[in-house]
Length: 113
Image 1 (cartoon, helix red, strand yellow):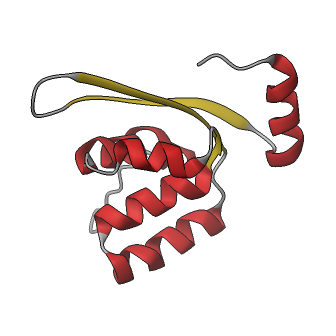
Image 2: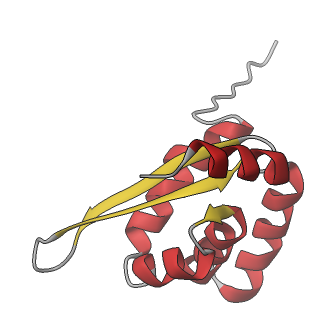
Image 3: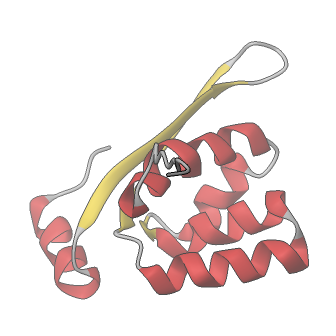
């Protein structure tokens, strides 16, 4: 993604830690799409709101809403519009990129003693 350093500094000042993200996927015609954006680091409150939201609106809309809250450049609505029809790609971004902020690939076990 092409973005000037001054704009990156401004986004960091406004949002704290930011990251460049992308979602690449093929459509039904096997055409490759790549959506690039800058997003802020998610907070625990974001995940709590996401968890409540998916119970109300469902996972597909909830994923889009979650991404929209995190995108800081370009306009979040423009990013969501480009990925709206591709829920698997959106879910993969949340699973692969966002979940590790909160303990991705976690494993737990128990053993009776």
